[in-house]
Structure formats: structure tokens, C-alpha cells
Image (cartoon, rainbow, N blue to C red; front, side, top):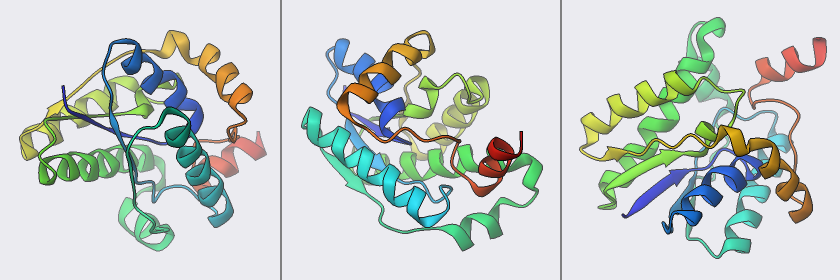
Length: 174
């Protein structure tokens, strides 16, 4: 299967992409994360993604844009920001896959027990229909902790919050 995987970060990729590799799939990776802020956090996570792709010798496309203004303007209600965040990144990935003739797509977001698995799956299926590509669902959440250990051994950057400035605020005010 020809598959494009949206990559949110190195640690989640270890779990999710590692699971796909174990299945005999060799995905191409896509870095598109306008939600990650502040700028230095965005830069560190992108470097971690590149390091991961280089380590596994996987092809990777990088959206270099830092999308603070676009993300904050488009998300609308702060309390439903995760829905916008999931949907917009999945839509970008599905469109990219369709434009490149790639038959399927997925996201490393599915690896994290901190993300809403069901919502991601629903949005993935919705945008898959729009762009005529398949959304591949895999549940590797039970391997997440082991994946973090591997990510640490690889020296990948280990973030402390989901990505947006609002999740950073929640993380550090609790």
C-alpha cells in the first residue's frame, strides 16, 4: 500500500510509523503542523521529525511555514481548538496525498493516548471521502510508552505539551 503519514512529532512517529514498518509498510512522511507554538517549539519538533525520517531513511515532505496567525485566526472557539487542529491537518494531508497520487494517508496522532482517537478517525474518514483517498486507522496506543523509551534512546526531542499555546498554558498552569 502506498501511504502518506502526517507526522506530529518524533516520539509519536516512533510508535505509529514503527508499527506500520512492522506490518511491512514503508510510508512517506509529511510534516505540517501550524498548530505548534511558540516558534522555537515548532523548530525543535520539526528537527525531531527530520531526525526520525533520516534515521529510518523514509521520504519526508516538510511544510516550512510557521502558522501562528493563520492557526489562531482560523480555529475559532478556543475550547474546540482540538477539533479544528485535527481536521485541518488531516485535510491538508489527504489533499497532499490525492495531489501526489498516493492512495492512502494516516497520522501519528493516532499513537497518542492523549489525543481523541475517535474524533481523529471520524475526521480522517470524512476528508478521505472528499479527496478520494483511504484513511488508514491503526491503534498502537498500547505501544506508546515503549515508543517513548525508544525515542529517548534515539535522542529525539521530547515535548511537554500537545503543541498549541493553549495546551502549553494548560500544561504549565496545572
